[in-house]
Image (tube, rainbow, N blue to C red; front, side):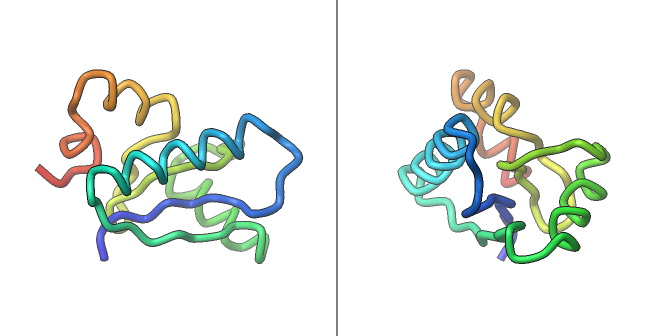
Length: 92
């Protein structure tokens, strides 16, 4: 599977929860298959996400196509507004 969504099931942040839910809802509505990777199961997954994103302070949700970084929630949201989600996810 190509698209990977790094997210967390353990957060006190309503913002993170709502952003994650919105990304999943949009991907589902576009019938884009994706793999969920829960960084709350271990610090190594969080570190992997941050390393791949090139940002030591990155927080979920973060999107990748295989190991190629696509972007964070704000970047995804801009792609939705511009109707360029497939290009953003490197599917087109």
